[in-house]
Image (cartoon, rainbow, N blue to C red; front, side, top):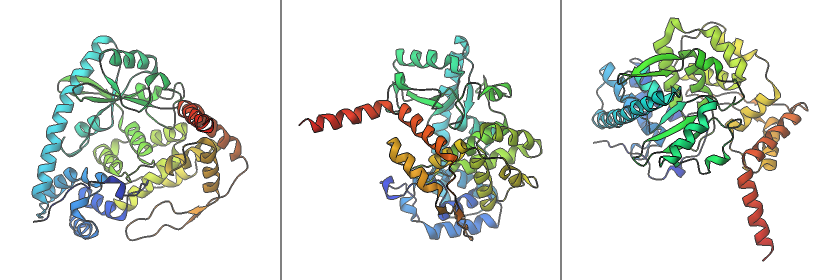
Length: 395
């Protein structure tokens, strides 16, 4: 009998932004109708070692089970995939229970909150709450309440999980900070929705269009579908140690559930406002190639016509490439990428043509500003490194 297992050493897989061809096949098997899903499943099984799956593929197996069951496709993997879906469902129920309790605590304290990503996605968009595994709660609170709540959590025994102290957190540079309670309940506390826009007032529209819902009879709020899609794609199109692709399933289900009610004009407007259209354009184009979508005619062309600022181009490169941590080498690497010809992504059955870049001199100020912001954001690590260098030189 075929057995599937997550690989013991994640370092075996190279990092990336775009899903590999085998991951694209798995997405098709988990999302499409018959016979395309069955064909993709067969091709996927031939393209991977089932006993050493990357973690991103492993986390999609509960959704694969849900889709194969829906289609009545019988496969030897179904039994184990069913067990994984049941395990995911059980873990999620515990997370939902703790989330509901936490939301009630915030309500009594007068702290508004929006539930982001997994918890909201599983309950509002996915076919069942076990099809979308997750490990923590992503929660947005107003910037004015962020440090009040964060310090309260620390005073109650929660631990920081981001590898540096809360006192070093800069809410104008980063959108969130992680905490974990002694019982294992983990919360990624957001002061902003988007990595790309942490400016004052950036989240006003997200709050204004928040959608009410109930989690285990507890009142809750989350993003509107258009804002959810903006968040999912812009967050997903980022470099990761294992090429992430669950964002594609998230985005697919948002569109599947929203359909005719989705406000594409508003979506394009917010994409322009936050200057994330490079990520959104690439993300939607890739999705449409892997799992064809019913996009409005001319949508991708409309996104492509949005003027790209120097800052947005530099940020997109920084988000989608592995770069050195020190700011001068990082700036030099970005400058080099600006002049290279590179493919955005390869799709099963087709190859992307290299897209020729050009080095524009007007990008230099944006590049230097980016380098300085990185230096300021990572100033603690910078001073620590300088201290080690000076100690080494004095020996």
